[in-house]
Length: 175
Image 1 (cartoon, rainbow, N blue to C red):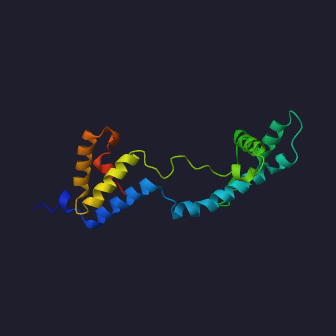
Image 2: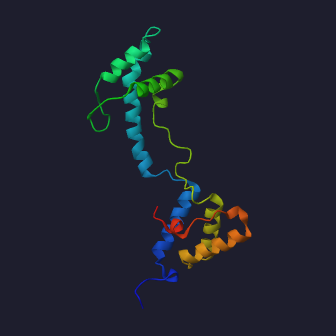
Image 3: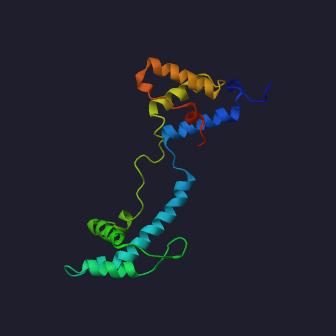
């Protein structure tokens, strides 16, 4: 005996964590970190608005915007989270200005960090594969992760909708 556990003797906790990861992938995750992070993103949105707000309140005359942006870029601002001094380039300030100016209803919200469309999704494992593994797990809870992966490979040979099948290491990767 070498002391290395084979695929059939994987601890139950490992199988449970696989199912938890698959459920999070299949149904998305609005976890605590996203809720906690939203306060920081709100602080950044308000900070960005405070930097360019004077330009929105009193728009510069034609041809003077670049000069005003240069003045703002020369200023040192207090970082909204750490409090350290920070500077921003003219192009960054210009991007904030035009995004806020274009928004009619809530210019602060448009300055908030945008979440990616694929946030919470794992590209390596499609929804069809996730559903197949979840159904397989529901029917065979005692199987190891390796056995589940081998069976998904066999299913994918018969059903092309389940391709591409992620690697074993992707299947067992920590969440």
